[in-house]
Image (cartoon, rainbow, N blue to C red; front, side):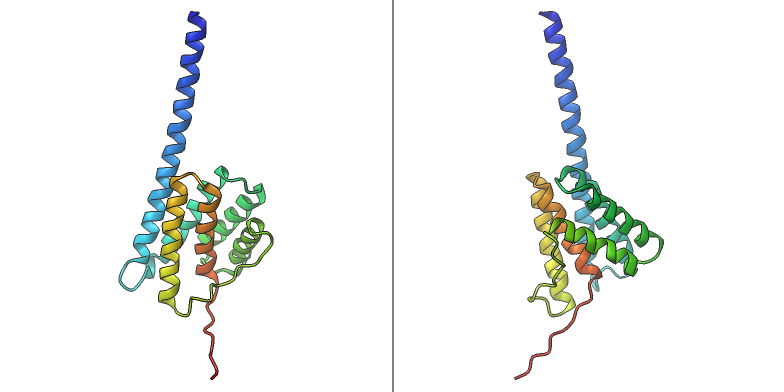
Length: 169
């Protein structure tokens, strides 16, 4: 009986430690998302902190991705995109290619489309803030797939050029 109690105690400790580590990762990702939002809320936008903000965004995606059901190629593409962004620019075309590959991997092969409701930079910023708030909610309820999709939408939106539609009467 003592052996059984000891084994149960040891298993309980491992389960608690595992949950604690996962909780710490969630808190860390959540803190990064809050920081990203703070850069977007700065008067005049992120400005020179844009690269830091983008790096935090990619780190958040990479950190949360192992909790998803996404294929290993997704994480590989995200890590390559981050490596290129870190060494050059967040707008480096090679890095952008990896972001779009990752996007297609988790969106049934579809390419990213800028939402029709976005017509200027402020619309894009507001939409990104909404996606980041949704990502935080999904993270909280452990919908990691949806959280990562929200974060990736923001990342891809940042590197995708906006085209203003001209309306003819």
